[in-house]
Image 1 (cartoon, rainbow, N blue to C red):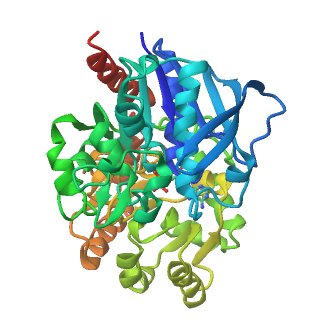
Image 2: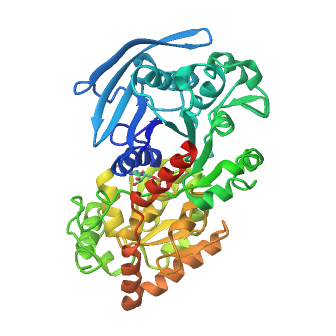
Image 3: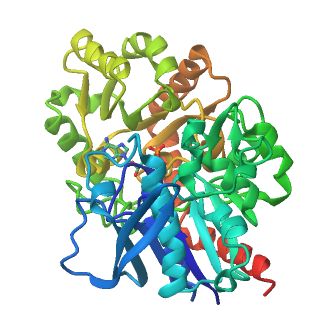
Length: 468
Ligand code: ADP
């Protein structure tokens, strides 16, 4: 068995803005259950208290160009996994995890302190990096610290969770990364005159993974490559897709404590109670019990397909459906849902914000779940929907294509409003036939996307890299 050190900018339950946190929260635990020793290095953001942690090391200095940044390391065990928190309050104790002018220092400091953890506290066989925020570990290990015996033999896995966000910086910031100037070339980290942190991870990792097999193929095409498709094609020999799992301890209607009533594929009765509570909670009249309820839980961003939804939303609502939505993000999409509430009073309701309980309640209380994404590296909500018997209508892209099939959900291919509308209408037509619908619900609920199988694939990859 191997020792694996993950480096990431977020991990549930400590810090979460999206699916990355779910993965870094759950995969280490699943690997530990397979017998690996696993640790995670992440920033100590202001919302993470140190009261129940051990002070592991003090005043470590990270040299980033002209900056010498001091950090302390705190540690704590969480469900069989060792967490190390890099504590530099002036960098991490802020509102919002990303989007700061000094993000290169914030995450450069994280990456150099991951190497400090390796040097002083916890030496792994493999470092496993996630997205652009931890990508710098790869060029540090393979260039700046290449001759340092401390790090000899450590293998690097780099996982792309979303290619849209690459960590792009103005070239004036390159000297502040503490890397040799030859890396500022197109074959390494230069990108249209800027610095691209993700490129550093791609070039120097021993293996690259992304979060679904379909997305691994898609990101090598211009349509999904965000300018890096050619670069990724050059490294396709070390790139593969491993589908994310989901945590059924959190997301299973037979044990979900957020719900009005439990239910399962053997006994679906509780789902009606969940539907009723959802309607009441969102202030929608009970007459909607007789209508199909469509659900959405999502960041309101272009990626999630709201442009094609907005084209067909009025026509769809005229099919006598009810719509329940949870999310927040770009104003133009929030306005779309506000306008629908006004146009269809009593049949559409949106909660703007982040609310874990309501996310569970929409998964359970809706009949049909909509995910018409423009692109979707893996996507978790469609997998939750399957387990909750809430039939997903999805665009066949990325992880949506890998997890939903014609037996369990409804798919459409082109990013094209009429195709989306046709797919929803196919679902609505079948909904009118309770026997066929319930059979579909039961098939969906029996699908298994638990972490164990994904963790086994990562485990195989580590073994392959270590020659074991
Ligand atoms: P992404 O990482 O692109 O946002 P995923 O589907 O991979 O999309 O993961 C999103 C995660 O965040 C899921 O666990 C989902 O339930 C949760 N989520 C998204 N928006 C909200 C919200 N407004 N309130 C609560 N949970 C949310």
